[in-house]
Amino acid sequence: MAGFDKRVYSYEEAMAGLEDGMTVISGGFGLCGIPENLIAEIQHRGTRDLTVVSNNCGVDGFGLGVLLVDRQIRKVVASYVGENALFEKQLLSGEIEVVLTPQGTLAEKMRAGGAGIPAFFTATGVGTPVADGKEVREFKGRKYLMEESITGDFAIVKGWKADHFGNVVYRHTAQNFNPLAATAGKITVVEVEEIVEPGELDPSQIHTPGIYVDRVICGTFEKRIEQRTVRK
Amino acid sequence: MALSREQMAQRVAREMQDGYYVNLGIGIPTLVANYIPEGMEVMLQSENGLLGMGAFPTDAEVDADMINAGKQTVTARIGASIFSSAESFAMIRGGHIDLTVLGAFEVDVEGNIASWMIPGKLVKGMGGAMDLVAGADNIIVTMTHASKDGESKLLSRCSLPLTGAGCIKRVLTDLAYLEIKDGAFVLKERAPGVSVEEIVAKTAGKLIVPDHVPEMQFAAQ
Image 1 (spheres, each protein chain N blue to C red):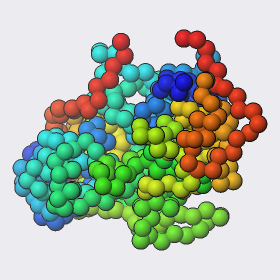
Image 2 (image 1 turned 120 degrees about the vertical axis):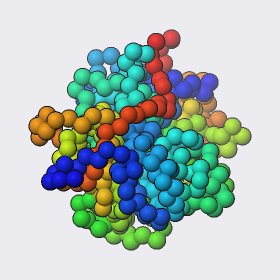
Image 3 (image 1 turned 30 degrees about the horizontal axis):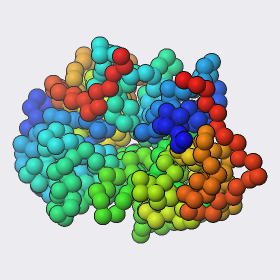
Image 4 (image 1 turned 180 degrees about the horizontal axis):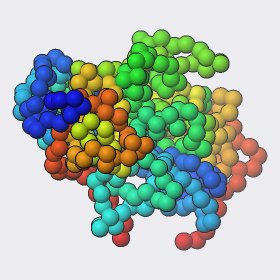
């Protein structure tokens, strides 16, 4: 790699340096906008004892669900994990730990982590089990929880288009957690559908500026749909 | 007769106002979109990052990158915007949503809501529900008045782990429309043909019954 050329040409290279026990932050909502090939590469590498931070944990056999097969995940931080039978089994048997986190709090934990803010206060979760063990402080007569931000050893991100500088745009609601995850990784890896020529992306339309991105790889995607719903 | 799911959606839709930004939860709340009054413009927010949710797509329009918070394929209407999950919850937490409609397992006289966890059974997670109830001022909870076994879901104190504390002021059940005020449910309307006595019998929490409780009106379908 030279200068600002962040392109890599193999998934092995894209995930180089990932080790047992690391924290991986992943973009995606359900199966929409997930870095499916980067996840598959983690499965292939056989990395273990991972802490995975992601809104969901995939489904059986796809997305982050593939990392459950060989018990590569030790802990999951997520807002909703209801689509995965293997996950349920490992949770009930105590093989995996889950920290259920409100969706907006999870998004803000990533955003804050990437922005150098160690913690923030939110009214979300006050008076609920989410508040257990957390500092509560009153501002203007209302109670707020202190929530600590999250950073990861790796962030894995799915974009639509990128240039070799690592500038990324996302497509439709496949954006979701991706730009937040991108800011919060010590090493941020973005896989995209297309790497375009320098200058092709309009600077004012960039979702993730290249400064957050360490590696870019072009892939092909299955883009599985969870709930195909059509009108007649 | 208890209200059907469609009638519950119809009743909630009457709380819409022109120009409202609205977040609809999964289940009955989703159906509310079908009954937005003619001539009224409402923008639906989906918390995965879409403001201005449109109809479900045709077969040809289906796009894996275009889904709602229920993970269903959707379209975006004219005037829509798409953004990150942090931006989406900034709108929600910041109080910018005019009306939130969501389901629940239990609600109590203090405005507490339980909707995400039944201990001993699988815990799937709260998704965005805790942010939605903490961020919105105007919330309507839709649920059946009692469980299939006849146990009231309108309680003195929620028995399940809470989603939010002291945040619910309005509840629409299949039997009644109620407000929560000063530590009690106030019966405002009853479903057509449902007696006040039945509602009293199925409400475990303190219930205030005014002298006159109007019946909800529905146009013949």
